[in-house]
Length: 103
Image 1: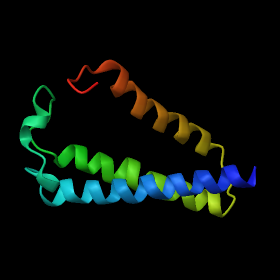
Image 2: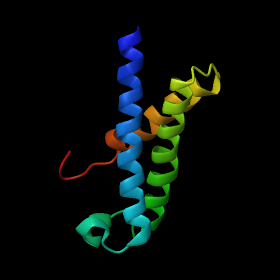
Image 3: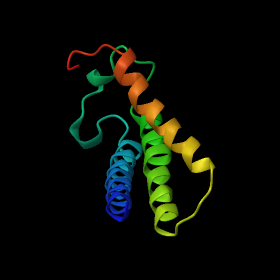
């Protein structure tokens, strides 16, 4: 069980830091973050990467960092189960429902 918690902590940190970096890049340069063209947003309700960047930074970046801190401090808050389920649904639902050329 100790190794699983360590693995979960590392995963939360890696995902959180990556989401913070990607979200920050989208917020700072919403028209071409990290060289991504606006054509990637065709068929989506967004005209720039600002709103997806805010979601990426706030929900996935800060959320995963907070989850890692809670895990490290051994906080037993029952809302964490809800947050983990919400995180899973927010990741899996778009992947299953949206048809993209690379899926």
